[in-house]
Length: 360
Image (cartoon, rainbow, N blue to C red; front, side, top):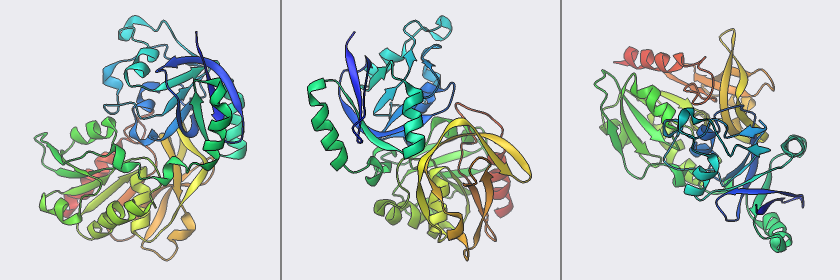
C-alpha cells in the first residue's frame, strides 16, 4: 500500500497510509470530535477549503449511503484518520469510504496519531497543511504553505452556493426565501417539512427576494470568513436591507452574517467548534448541539446595537445565538437540523414559522 504524508506549515511531517484519490492537496487543517456522521461532515459545504481530521479512531465502519449526503459533492480537501474500515457493515450496502473519496477525487491518509495532531492544533491553533504523495516534494510544500494565504481569505461561499435560484413547492402555507451560502441538505429537508422554499444564490439582492413574495428569509451555513469583502457587498448588505422588511433566521454562517449586518463584528477562533456534542445554554436550559464553524460573533461588539446575545456556549462562553430587540430576527450558531447529530433544537424551525405567521 502506498504512503501519503501530512505536512504542516510549521514543518511537521506525518507519514501514513494513502487511501482515497491519488493526488496532493492543501487546505486548513481542522478537526471534528464527532463519533459518527463522517459522510455528513465531508459532504457539508461548510468544510470547503479544509483538510479534516477525525478524532474518533475508526472511520467508515458503517459504510456510505446516498441518503446521508449533505450536498452533491465532497467538499473537504483531504481526510485524516487513525484507521479507516476496509470492510464496512453490509447494512447500508457495504460501500467503502475509500471508494467514496476516490469517486470525488479527494485524498485521504490513515495511520496518523490523530491524538498528537489534535493536541498540536488545540495548543497552537489551526494550521495550513497538505496531503503529499511524493516524499521528495515535502520541503517545497512546506515553503509553499508558509507563503500561501489561508483558504478562508478567499470567497469560499462563491464556490459552494447555487448558481441560480430554484423553488421547492411543498404545498405549505408559508414560503421561506433561502440565501444559500453553502446550505446542507438537512436544512433544506427541515424547512421543506414545514414551508415552501425559494432558494437563491448568495449574491441575491433584497429586492429580488421580496419580489418572490416570501414570508421570511433563512441565511444558511457556509464556509470561510463572513467579513470577507465579497460577502460584505452581497449577503451582509442584503441581510441589512431585509431586516425591517421580513422575519429572518440565521444558522451558523448566517448567524455571523446577521451580526455583521446589525453592526457587530466577528473573529477567527483558535481552532473552532466542530462536532456533535457542544453544549449551549438557551432560555435557562442546556442543549447538546451539532457544530461546524471556525469564526464567531464578538459579544462585546454588539454593545450599542439593536441585537443581543441570546445563547452561549457552556464550554468557552462564545456566542451561540443572537436576537434583535425589536424585529423578528434570531440566529443560532449551531445546526438545529443536525444531520448528523442531536435533534434537541429542531424546535427553532417551528419558532421561525410562528414568527412568520405573526407578521402576516
